[in-house]
Image (cartoon, rainbow, N blue to C red; front, side, top):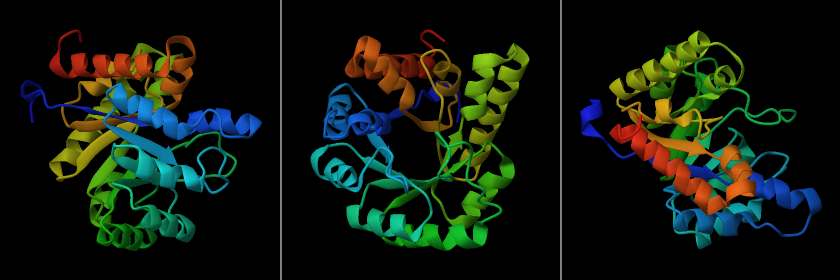
Length: 255
């Protein structure tokens, strides 16, 4: 694949933190399902929601309503547990993304150790694939994890971009470039193995374009930044601006 092909790049919007705001006071406002419908009209290509073990933001009924009421593909983000497997196969989303989960973490802190947990992850992936749910594994930009994801039977990997975000926020240009190069190399390698390649975590208006310009990427999943930026410019406008930046980077218009 070359940059000249200018393949489209999808934006999946994670609406978890609309639910975080709702849950801070209880009740049902703001409604994450309403937010998902709004970002659909603003040009998002998919909705991601992470149903955590402790239900700190998204709830079971949110997942059901997202599937039933929003006319976009739903990506069910979840840990590899029996409880989540059962709920996922009840909801039957378009896709699921399996992530590591630590009850005490504020957000997902790193990629899934597919290589170290292969014998557990592979049957889990197979069962979801057999149910007709497209499985993605959220992994760090490391060759061994991508090879393990392929061996486990996942058709998609999502590359964790958190270290790139942290470098861009606080360190030197050399460190930023080094972290970006890991993402670029991982995306090319995963694509060479026949995987569909996504990326996400910590992407903002300020750092998204280099990542969006990577030709092997098919989708970016972005949430916290867009929900936060909605306070200042509105959720629909934040989504539209992110899409514009992504498309410009992909076509080379302004990047």
